[in-house]
Image 1 (cartoon, rainbow, N blue to C red):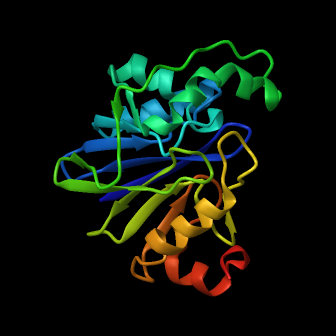
Image 2: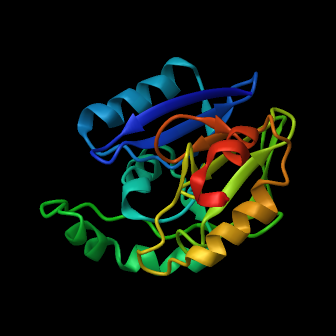
Length: 213
C-alpha cells in the first residue's frame, strides 16, 4: 500500500491518500483549505492516475472536512463517516465561527454512507477495518490495515498526546478507555498516522505517552 501524506490548512491537518498497485485509492480527511492546497491534492491524484473509491472521514470536526466539498465536486463522492458525528455537519458554521474562520462560505456535503465498528472499507486489493473510538468526538473512527501494520487514527491519538475532549460531545474517560482497549491491543510495531503531527507507533506511545499512564 502506498501512503501519501499532505499537511493542509492553518491547523495543520494531515490528509492521507492510500493507493494499491493498480491505482485504486481512498482519501482520508481531505482538509485542503487554500486554493493551492486543492490544486496540490488534485494534481497528485491525476499525475498518478489514481481512481478514488472512497472519501473517508475519521471524524467531522471542521478542520478535517474542509476539502469534502472539493472532492465531492471533482469525483462525485460523498463522505463516509460515523453517524454519531452527523450533528457536527449541522454545526459546521458554528465551528468555523468558534475558531475564527469568519469569512468562509463553502458548505460541506452530508454523509453518504455511515461507517460502524468492524466495517470493512475495500479499495482494490486493500482493506481497512473500521474501529470506533469515541471521546474526541462521539463518532471518531480509526482505519486499520493489518497487512501493512498501520492505523489512521484522526485525532484519537498523537505522538505523545491524545485528542482534546473539551469540544462538543467530547469525553475524556471514554477516549482513554478506547485507546487502551482497542489501539493498545494492536501489535507494538503498528504505525500510527495521526490527524496532526508526525507518525508514531503503538509501542512508542505505550512507553512514552504521558496521557496513558
